[in-house]
Amino acid sequence: MIKQNVNQILSQLPNGVELVAAAKTRQPEEILEAVEAGVKIVGQNYVQEAGRAYELIGNKAKWQ
Image (cartoon, rainbow, N blue to C red; front, side, top):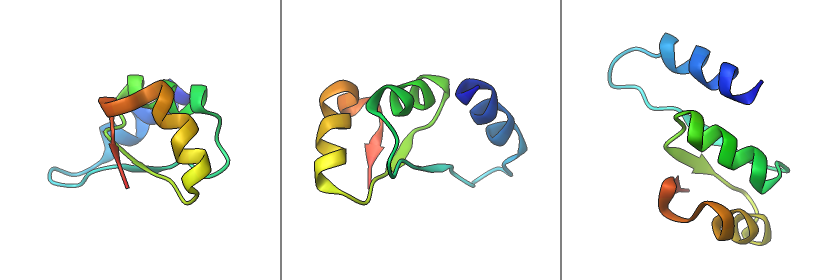
């Protein structure tokens, strides 16, 4: 379901607009699925959550 949602959102974005995925309270595996579907920028509120997700995803996405 994540892949389909990301694909739908990306197809609707105008040129020059980037999607920033808010990853608050999401599991690292869910974030990875979004990145693999085309998310390039991940926004994370908590350092602890970002650290766990970064261990799995690394530099496959830009972190904010």
